[in-house]
Image (tube, rainbow, N blue to C red; front, top):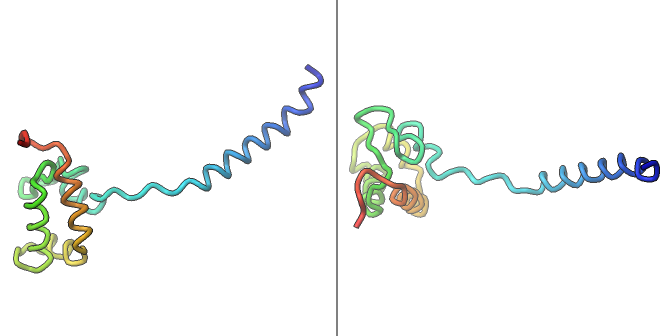
Length: 110
């Protein structure tokens, strides 16, 4: 036991340093695609904050793409959604639509 004790503290110090370096090298988790949407539509589009706010979870991909494009172009009028969609690129719209379409919704998809 006496032979091991002088090595215990240095080994623990090195081990903790290795853990800190490994943790520092891990990339930060990417933000969820719905981070901005969740404020009104709820996490994953499941819990809208008001009856006027639609549930996005489980909506059809093509419908979501079309709706976001219309908000972005001003064809659909809503001050909040118009402002949110105006800065979205086509690829961001695709990512959002894919994310919400993949969420379980209220009905069965065929």
